[in-house]
Length: 376
Image (cartoon, rainbow, N blue to C red; front, side, top):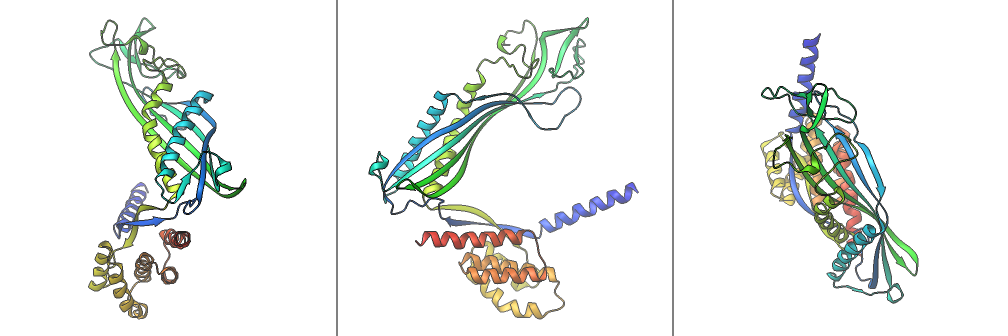
């Protein structure tokens, strides 16, 4: 029975690999309409505030002889201070102003009373410092160092002499990473009435790790980290954890700038289109090569020429016919023939349906919407 189960698992895995190998990715640039289009809006005022914020410490322990998966535990959480919220708001307002000033069709004014439209952004900021305490191994050359059982607040190995723990002799591995998440609600107001609302999210990260053997008398061991790990919620560090956020902020503000640009101005998104490797004929194999090169009109000519004969050929598998029409739909979408693309996708579904077909349908609808917005 066990051999049968292994064989079945192997077969499923092989089929998944084969299915994955039947597709390729084609990178294309797509012009997107922003959530809040500020073109031809005249005078505009802009303001941003941090209405809420919190800072958290999370702990995940990989202790002693076993890895314990599961959710990370929040061991400390507190509200972001008023000064910190104001600092974030000031930095992000400067970014917002710089983004608006890059647009030629908008004049930024310093008061809503002078503006035709007002852009208001409220932000929620979450700072997280996450610690992963790692286990160590018994060291044969140091028989007094033993991996302990797994008490709740201890992790790693310490020297055990006569049943006592010596914190000056402690093996540990520690990884910490800082992350900042900004959730923004942006609104365009016209005479105090909300005209349009959009929500965006920005992220910033910093990751660091290290480990050492702490030995009493070792000159390069800083005193601040001697007792690290004995209390999951209290770490002594040379740099307080809140100051570690400075390493995540540059990436966070870079993300904020990108999100603000996409919020108010058209932008190009690079995306990967999935297409199927068509093996029905050499000519259709060539159509896939044309798609890879971005020659969508040439590929469409081949699809159009072969569509009727493929429908009538009973020897071609339904799945292969479906993939043919899916690729046909992709090519039509790329030349903005959206209605014909939808018809081809419906035809593909009539033969055989794949999960990615819905993704393509959603992408076609988004492009129709974006085109309408950009042509206003």
